[in-house]
Length: 440
Image 1 (cartoon, rainbow, N blue to C red):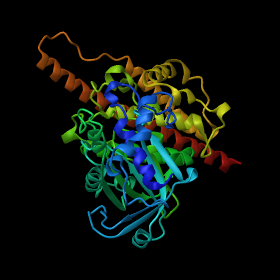
Image 2: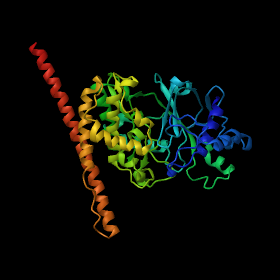
Image 3: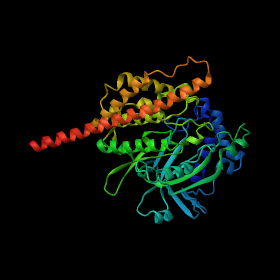
Image 4: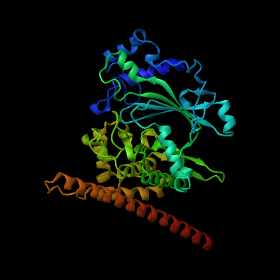
């Protein structure tokens, strides 16, 4: 498929996809991201014949996309909105491409990219480009990243642990144009535009093991907390959004990546149709019917729980930086389950399974921390919610707000205590090993 046709196909699929608020999947997306033509034949026929009925621009076709999969930008925008010429050549081969699926199965694609101009600006750095169709009503990722950068300045817990965009561009395509051609009511509600962003290439955090993994995971936890307290809420913690790189001394440094679903505390009210999260890592409360319908406010504790699920996931599924063979790999069912089934499986895991499973040998130390945090989730899940004896809605609302704030802060304190205990245990183990070595 040529790059311009690929652009059109993504635009059409995004326009035809049902809003997530209906708690139904897109018309013909299979759970692995492929298109299931048999699931909704009428929509598939529209997909086939729509380009003949509408102008190319309305179908997402863009002249910036060339047949050999490169973009030729006469006017570009960098992190400081600087102009200039850019040419980006994408490697769209499967081994060079990563696709990330969200809770509604809409995807973000990441490709390796070559750009002579950017290579001169940032010598010696491999780069990737991120291609996505975010909802237009949401604060854009470039705008979020600008605030992230400002907040991280002078903050050692965040400065080296955030993504740094080299270049970005919003293309003048909107799914609303296609929906208007089809006379779809409320075409502008939940409409999407195409964004292209270029970043330094990072490594998946799953390539790390043992203490290196723990250190990078901890970097992301602390960075996330600093940003949350500064009013930037990530809201999509998953194994694919925790990355790393090696500094000049060869140390692994964690990076909290992908802010396309982040929100600002000053504008926290839900907008558009998108529900945020990656199902296997989402907090159980957000996987409930109320959570999926947007009736539960996304709080710090939800992202904190997602960090715990990432830790569990890596400890059980990866060995020495490689995913374990399928027959010895746990939690596969979480990938295939719908949201509410996944929630039930997580509850069962906390109540019954986690004490009996065996982590990979390269993550035995990290599994101690995971078990401690699982126990914390189980204990906190049994605690009562604020009382509802009062008939005064304002009083009850204020009480609930105080409870939620204290609940989040208490969770963070327990999170910190668990990590401190784990790090203290690692130091004791190292001291014992050193003493044993000295005796021999």
